[in-house]
Length: 282
Ligand code: AMP
Ligand code: MN
Ligand code: MN
Ligand code: MN
Image 1 (tube, rainbow, N blue to C red):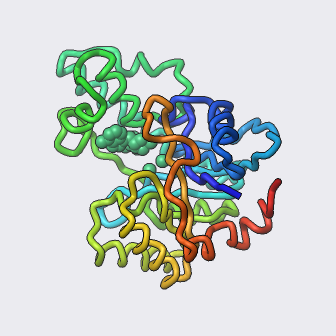
Image 2 (cartoon, rainbow, N blue to C red; image 1 turned 30 degrees about the horizontal axis):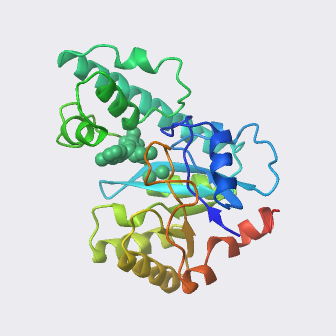
C-alpha cells in the first residue's frame, strides 16, 4: 500500500477538483488517499468509488495552542457529524470575516475587488492563499511568497489576526466524529525541541492520536525525531504530500519521503479506527 493522507482541493486552497487528485494518485501508485481540506469537508461529498484507490475522509483544522497557530488533520472522520460541521462552519465564518477585513485594508491601500473576486469560486474555506493569488494577479505583489512576506504574514500590511478554535476543541471534534487526530507538519511551526516535546505531550494528554512524520521538504533529522516521539508517547505515524497545486512542480500526490521501518511499524494504518473503517480497503 501507499497512503497519501494530506491533500487539498479547490474547496479550500487547492487548485484542483477531487477528480484531478484521483488522477495524480493513480498515476503515482497511491492506494489510499485522504482529502483533507482546510476547515471544510465539501470534497468528501459524492465521492465515487475508484478501482485501485481507497478514499480516507479527512479535514485539516486550524487551531491555536499557546498563542501559536497549529494545523490538526482528522482522518477517518464522519463528515455528517453535527458537532464537527458546527465547528467547521464557525471556522468558515471566521475565514470569511477575515477576508472582509483584508479587503477593507487592501482598498485603503488602493486596490479594490478582493472580495468580489472570490464570489462564485469553489472555495468554502477562504484562505490567505486566495488573497496571495489575488495580489499576484493584480500586480500588487510579484510572487505568492512576496505576498505572504509583505502583506499577509504577521508583519504584513494586510495582516488580520485569526481567532481559530483551540487545540482541545479541534482534537475533540475530530475524535467525536469517529476520527483520528494528527498534528500536521510538526516541523513547520516555530518550535524548538523542548517546546515541540511539550506540544506532543499536551496533544497526547488531550487524546491526540498521531504525528505527521513525513511530508515534503522535511529534514531527515526532523523525521527521525518525530518518529521517535511517536514511539515514546504511544502515538501513530502519518504521512502526506499536502498537495495543493500541480503548478508547484516540486509537489505531487504521493510525493514525500518514505517512512523509516520504525515509522511503518507505528503507521496510522495500524490504528484501530483505521483498521475497522478502512481495513485493507481495496
Ligand atoms: P490560512 O489558513 O488562511 O492562514 O492560509 C494558510 C495557507 O496559506 C497554508 O495552508 C498554505 O497553503 C499557504 N501558505 C502559508 N504560508 C505561505 C507562504 N509563505 N507561501 C506560500 N503559501 C503559504
Ligand atoms: Mn493550504
Ligand atoms: Mn497545514
Ligand atoms: Mn495542508
